[in-house]
Image (tube, rainbow, N blue to C red; front, side):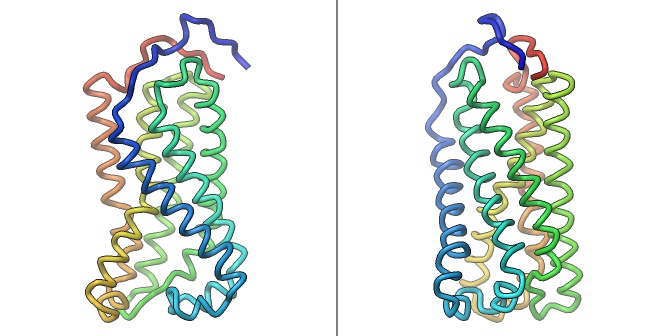
Amino acid sequence: MVRLTPADTLPTHRPSTAPVWWILTPSIVVAVALAGVHLVVIPLFPVVAQYYFSQQAKTFDEESVALSIHIFFGAVALIAGAVNIVTAGRDRRLRSHRAVGWVYSASVATSAAFGIVVAFHAYAGTLPGGRAIVTSGFLALAATWVITLTLAVEAMAFRGDVRAHRFWMTVNFSLTFAAVVLRAWVGLLLAFGNGAFELLYPTLGWVGWVPNLIVGILIARRLRATGKLRPRAKFPAP
C-alpha cells in the first residue's frame, strides 16, 4: 500500500448538491426497491411474482439464485458507484474513495457474471426475434460493463493514470446507472398498456443502456476537455 503525502492529495472542494438529487437519490431508491422485491418480498411471498412482472414468474422461480446474486451485487454497485461519484473530491487522501471503489469493482464484476446467466432468460415478449434481441442486448451490456471497468481499474492500479481512470469510471457508472433508466423505460411502456410492454420490452435489451453509454462517453469527454478529469497531482499506483 502506497502512503500518500500531503503533496499527493487533492484539495477539497464543496461540490454541488445537484449530483445528490440526480445520481445518488435515484440510485439508492432503485437499488433498495429492487433488492427488497427480489430478495425479500418474492422469497417470503412467492405469490407476488404472479403479479409483479408476471411474465417472468417462471424465471424468478427457476433462476432465483443467479437472479438474486445479480440483483444484490448490482444494487451494491449502484449505491457504491453513486456514492463515489457524488463524494469525489471530499476525501483528501482518497482512502474511503479507494475502499468504496474496490467494493464497487467487485460488485460490478460479480453482477455482470451472473447477468450473463440471467440474459438467456430475460422476457422475450411478442416481438418477432425478441429472444435474440433481448438476450444479445443484455449480453452486450454485461461485456461492455466489464470491459470499461477493466480499463478503469487497469489505468489506476497498474499505471497510476488518474485521468484515464476517471474517464473510464465515468463511462462505466453510466452503464451501472442503466438500472435506473431501464426502470423508467419499463414505466413508460406500461403507461401505454400491456400490448406495448409485451411487444417492445425486448428492445430494452439495447435501448435500456446504449443511450446511457453514449451520454456517459460524452460527459467523460466533456469533463476531460474542461480539465475536470485532469489530476492536480501525480498519483502513484496503489
